[in-house]
Amino acid sequence: MELSAEHKAILSGTKGKTLAKVLETLVAFGDVFGAERLVPVTHNSGHLVTSFGLGLLKPLFSTMDKLIDDGIKVKGDFTMDPRPLDVENVPYNLLERFVNEVIMYAPQKRYESQLKAVGLKDENAFSCACYLDEVGNIPKKGDILSWAESSAVVYANSVLGARCNRNSGMLDLFGSIIGAVPEFGLLTDEGRKATWIVKLNCSELPEAQILGSAIGMKVVEDVPFVYGLDKFLGTELTDDVKSYLKDFGAATASNGAVGLYHINNLTPEAKELGEKLIVPNAKVYEIDDAELERVYRSYPNMWKNPNAKIDIAFIGCPHLSFAQLNDWTEKISEGLKNAGRNKVAFHTIACAPPDVVEKFKKTENYNRLIATGTRLTSICPLMYTSNPLTKSKAIATCSNKLRTYSVARYYKTDDLLDLICGKK
Image (cartoon, rainbow, N blue to C red; front, side, top):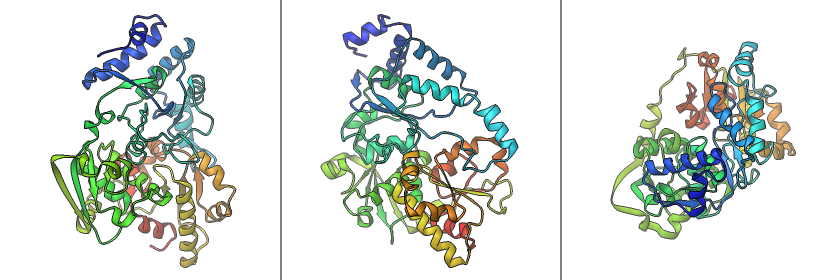
């Protein structure tokens, strides 16, 4: 790899062994993928995926200590994925709390103090949806990022037009420390071209989570160019459209490994370059109502008792936007009213970023939502399901990401709403 004089000096140890190791790791990462150089990170607010102080991650904690001992910090700041625990707003029994707090996530406080020492943005900087207005980590079109978290990376690449590869934990931090990342893949013009054409021919706007799932499972890690979605979403990135694409992208990234998608007439690069983004002889995937129903019916029911009654439902993976939180409040309130009920039928947890929650608490809808028995949290529901004691619970969700990484059962949004309101 071609390196600058500054980077060669760092590798030689002029700024200490620890920083040399950080850069050595980035260079090795780039070498694996054939990168010829490092390019500067132009958006100096990173996003880190490893937000949980899991006891097994001892090498992570020791690495953080070495960084802190040498006074090494990121060049700007960074946001994080959600915290794993919230004992005030999420129901845990005593044994679950013991496993979480004493066994699994015992180092959480220590780890968060380490994060602050190397450049964590603030106390509220814990959300997988860091790009929401309230959180404020919003890169510009063309910005080079050092981010991890699959749903955040695919959103930044696709909806914002920034450039970032699907990095893993610690590489996200190392790139923010050095202020540079290896140039390959989605950082290059060629790597951002679509190798799949997706032709959408549906009678109505598809469920974002199912459409994203279908595309992710078909194209896997490739870049799709989607025709037909603008028929339903229009050609402007409104708040509702961005919320839809947030959930759509998260499903493509978790049910496959998509890091970038283009939507004809809608996403920034598709509007600018159109079909120039499509490589010759691109593969074609046609999606209609029947194909989406086939994909939906293929999801397994992994509950220990397949016919169990729902114990708990999670809404918001990735985290809900402010608009989505208000929309769910309306849906649940009206659904309960129509069903002749006052309270939800089982534990219902809505997940949103801390800054969104703070904003929402200042509205009338906050009291309306809490009055239904719904609880509001900023945790990652995946971290809830990581506790082995939850495997026997009947967990429901309308998130394809949560379904993919846990034993939670997926329901279409309207079906889950009916269950929450006791209509089924």
